[in-house]
Length: 256
Image (cartoon, rainbow, N blue to C red):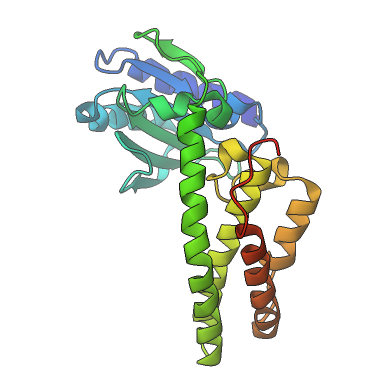
C-alpha cells in the first residue's frame, strides 16, 4: 500500500469511528494537507472539534480506529501547546516510514487559531455539524502586536544568552555553553522569520527550508552546524553580534 492510499485508509477509519459521536462537532485535517505540502513523508494532522470534557472519549474512538494497524507508541502531549486543546501522537506498526497520526481535540473556541489561513492554510473538512469550519483571515493587528512583543523580548534576552555562552566557555563547560548558544540560534530563526515569513514568525524551525530565502538559509546554516568546542568559541560571538545588529532597529514591517 503506497503512502497516499495508507493515509486515506486511516483517515476514513478514524472518521467512521467519530461520526456516531454527537459530542464531536467537526473533524478536519490541517498541516500539510491544508497548506498544499503533502508528500510521501507527511503525517495526518487531524483536528477534532469537541468539548474538552469529551476529549478522552474522542481519543478512545481514534485509538479504536487505529487498533487494526497496531499502535506502537502514544505520546500524550501535556501540557498541550494551544489553549482549549488536548493532543496525542500515534505511531503505527504497518505505517510507511516517518509516519504519525497527530490528533488534536479542540473546543469550539480552541479551534479558532487553527483556522487562520495565512498561518495554517485551508482546512480539509471531513464533516462539520456546525458549518463553521472554514479558513478565515488572520487578525493582523493582534499578530503585529505579538511580533512586536516578541521582538522586545529578544532585545532583552539575546545579550543575556550571549553572556551565558561566554561564561560557560570560560568555566570550561562547553556543553552548557552549547545550550545557551542554541537559544541564540532559535532567536535568529525568529528574527529572520519576522522579515521573511511574518505570518509564521513563531513557527520555529518548521518550514525554514521552504519559507526562508537562500541567503537567510545560508546564514542559519553558517551558525547551526557547529563541529566542536573550537567552532563554538569562534561562532558564538559572531552570532551574538549578528543578532545585536539586527535587533537594534524596530521590528521589520511585513513585506519590507
